[in-house]
Image (cartoon, rainbow, N blue to C red):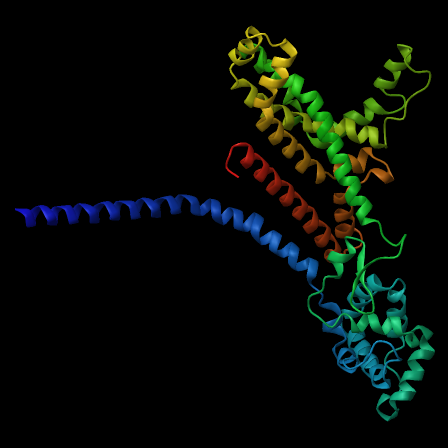
Length: 415
């Protein structure tokens, strides 16, 4: 009997393990579509973004002989005559194919004017009777085409691109570069401004977040004190931006904010100003339109937290002798911190990636980093620079999210 009972217990354990295994496989099957979806729309694009930011194939593919000839060059003295022979051969092959344009564009990032140098030299290819000429004669002939081929800097730009992967774009997106010794240094003043553009992006995003918080917190508090019917009505008004196209909203703000628009006419009729205010194509217009769009993202998290806070806490503090404002500030507000943090994080992260609103309502000094990502993608076709800027923007967003998770975890006693 004992043996029978032992056998039954073992069978039960096996059945339980089998049932658990089946449940795990079922759960994995249910999660598989989501995992595949995330990999396809997030992991692969981010990996491609990072790859394009460090990919450096142009010089390696179209000037292989020149790179071999420059392998032992010290990058200080004049390049050896053999490098001119290799250059003539590589440019001839680039002319026969489609590589001259890619090569010229890539090297032009290193030194302004390199594009014209490449095309000017390519047009002279092939050199006459190359096989019977000495390397020195070919060198003199190429320098005669353009004296810049005698300058070390132009050859150094070729020699420094002998790797398939380079941090050039990532450094350039931070206004950094490598000097002749390979050390990371700041670019010359006035040659780039990406650090100030990143600072402007974060400044505008922070301003939008702060204004949205100052407007959204009292609005959410007012809604949380309403009846459910009234709160739903106000919520519909708050959510109207969600149901309107971004371009329609921006067009509406252009009509309202222009010098002869409704806002300026109202201010002048009320006697608050003697002349129209400049509310369009500057930072003010950007703030107004972005706050209008971002306000629901601030109100919803705060409101959801406020609805769950029992009003008895604040009344209890007042009954124990606390001033109503002190009870509100010390008892009620701390309980809304999770909603405030979530709303601020959501608004800030969405704001730093904004493109259309600053592009249409802002001036030249109000464009954010997304504008330059679009510029390098659509106009200059510089995918490396666009990917580097996009990757840094994504990295900054992930850092902010990680910081938020750590701070929220500490508040909940999880850190």
